[in-house]
Length: 408
Image 1 (cartoon, rainbow, N blue to C red):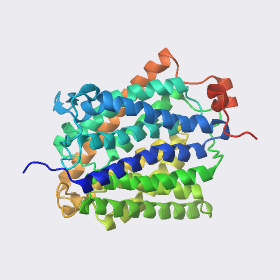
Image 2: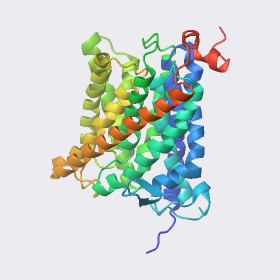
Image 3: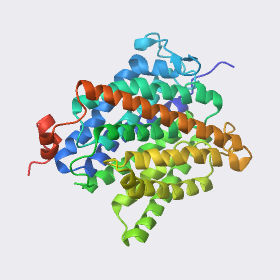
Image 4: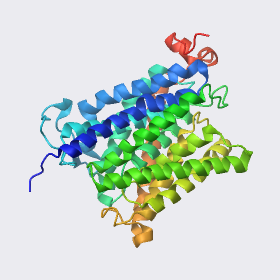
């Protein structure tokens, strides 16, 4: 039977696309903006906004075509037909989502590329040149995100190997977290490395928008408005709730007082961890994944960060990288064939799936780290990565943009 457009699926995917856009602007922008010093709030928000704009153009001109084109070069990249959006008809159905228009599928996948690069900005705030950030966005999306998206989602070698990533554990979160680590190793530490959130209210609103938008992120990745989307929806919320509660418990044990920063950090960690598993696991597994991920990310932020001595300003590696790692491995443990026939994990009799997940994690992390280092070094040697001391001390808002978030 030939594929037929489904109006319900199309409507759901349009809504999901809009929800994921909401995650980046204003979700990530507010979440990160509230956590920075007030002299850098606009610059921090601007980094997310410009990342979204640049990625939007790259994606329609050539990014989607390379990421989701017919596999070539032994699974590394797609064959880029329809460059510059030529030849994509209004009524053409998507090959990988045959009940919705290809234009809708392209837009949906664009939002994933945009939020991945926007997430990296949280690690490098308060010290990276805005011009260098713009150059980095172009290079990184083109040379890191696009190939990895093809490997996992576009029919590339990891997809052929059987790697499971329902909505972006490897493609989005491990990728962004590892890239953030590579970039901050090049940039070096800020002069003032303390986390001094100037407006946690912004961050709470941003986290709420992320939680809300994440239903489009995960449930939308079912690509249909059916039972799988409903399952992904409920496990997404469950994991976020469990992780928030477990982070607050850790706060109580460590400091005797719960914090709103801990609460929203836990919620985001839970959302990250369930992302690769959302279309494969039960609600019970989602509780376990959420409870454990706070331990993983809390350890990375409170212990690993200080021991390794890197300055991950807003803990992108600690939350996205580490919780993404746990989520990808947990998918190999908990994937249940009665939820989705495409995935069977270790606990349901398929230990090979966990091995495949480990290979996928290692491949994505290794490629992202090495190529990000190379791209960052090229930018540093040409236009420079870091602002001068005066700009960093006085604030990037006034020095780079001649603007101020507050007139008081």
